[in-house]
Length: 277
Image 1 (cartoon, rainbow, N blue to C red):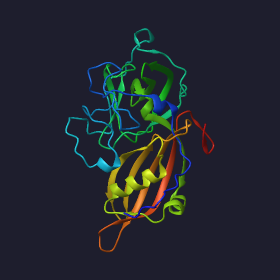
Image 2: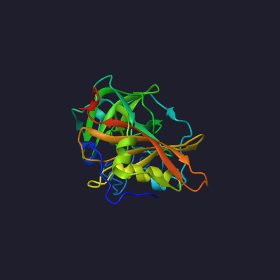
Image 3: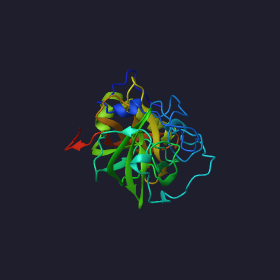
């Protein structure tokens, strides 16, 4: 793989909420403090359908999910949610207002995000949402638990609660190819997954270290394509980037050469024009 000697990171985005939120694994039977881990998604485990699994990084995205999980992109099991009197935690003045649309961010392509009957991983799952879902409508209710924050949302006829660590506002999209090449030079790798890991790391943060999550599995047509989320970088207005990479296989079929990077910003507090707010 072609690598620069001293990569120069771009301006980075990340959420303060992401930095402090620690989420237990979806299928854990414990309370909100259970399942704390380090080294995945900025030091968090994910409330996802995989039993005991954390969000896959681009370098390990080819690993097989062994537990049973839904095969459809979104499934709704119930349209009910807990009343305020029954909810865990305390009211929180979050950033998502009634009617705001949120997207899933930082969930691996072979995983799903749980929508739960109440805030916390010990409540029932009412729906599961795909890693690229972009139609979660906030109700305006939010809760703070000892180690996590939650939004109530409506999606596919279900109303429930999702971890704030894994949803965000979609910001602007730009072409980051020229910026990347100016700082890092041409990039090649043996696989699309390796290439995405390298590009995501170069565009991410060293301190705190970003997590590179493969959100869409590689596909090969006229060009190879892969999508990764760059999560956990240092600006409290932003959750990070989604990078859609295009690459061309070289003539001998031994490496993939980077061609284009489409970069979409994801914001924690909202979007104003071309910027996260």
